[in-house]
Image (spheres, rainbow, N blue to C red):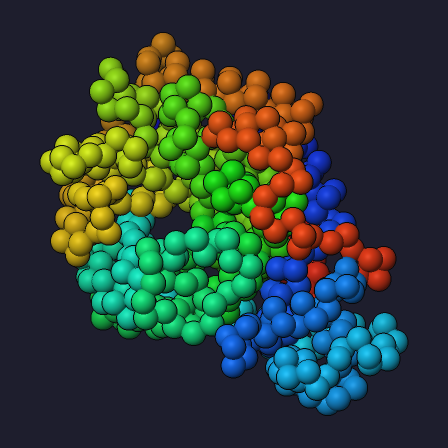
Length: 520
């Protein structure tokens, strides 16, 4: 593949500074928990379902413990199991009925309670490991083609109709199917229970919907003789819970960014930073590829002037991922094809930006997003832009190619839009399979010079962030031209400083299974 010959010392300097920036936030993460982390933990202890009023039992239990959640929910559940002989689910149901108060039970000695908590999470941890092994067996049996994986979306609002569309997409060549989450679910501080048969803009990201779609994609995968990957969204106020449910149902990828919720959903930054750490540890344990959201920066800021912020954010997301124990092969770092097509040499700019990200993150399965900002009602122009996007993805060796649709920005794509998107991508990637190998970029070429400029700007920006700090930089609007106050946003009240006796049984598992994970 064509290489840019970017300065490896400069890349390493940016990476080192990004780690310093991430570690400055990690100090806060290590000493805090959230209601969502605790709800994810009780789910891993076997608590699920909802009461007659559709209140999820994980919420019921954690709300019940609100004044003492700084010690961790796990010890109260384990202690109740020891006292009553009930299962965690039965304990949760008793709490919901009002027949059991977890705070009234005398706490048994710490070692006994902690051992019971570890015992209670074991079945779910074993299930996650089994799902991870099964996925790998399927992938090994049906190796992927030598091109970016073709990623399409389904978004009918009805999970059963989504199944039909997902199967159709797979038969037309899609290798990854993302089920779009219903509008504004990221702002709900609970996960709705049961299958979605009618939603707005998508379906709920919940365990039943995950199970239904996973089963459907396995079925069509057997028919086609290849493994079809499933994607959903682990973001918003329930990020750790959704990652947990995805891990239990063998999702393969999760939209899981360290800053997206802060910038684009006005979720409190303290809440988001703590939640993303636990969420990503679960994803790492499950072998789930995370997809980050840097492409969104280019919807609010200029794609040329602010290209360096995309690259800098990729480095920061990479370092938060490393601190969560994720390997590079699980980091679907994001960027996009969003330059105004009327600009002279716009395609060369796109190639320069895409090659720069590829060269900075050689082991990552980069997630490349299609043109959206400059799509119009002219579907022929849109098809042409998507062709250029597919060519850029193939030439620069992207890992995950989210296919553009004819009617992007107009309405939810029709079946034929998705079919034509797959046909376009398959043609371009086959026709241009070895195109990149035919070129050697001159040192003074437009692409090489542009790449070095973006890298230099990212270097200077990251150096500045080490002095300013990430939270101050977000407050000042240095990413995507969006300003967010550190004490503002949704979910702030759900963040707690850990008590000196805080315990979470998953932490020992993370330490054992995830080399490099940062946990105190």
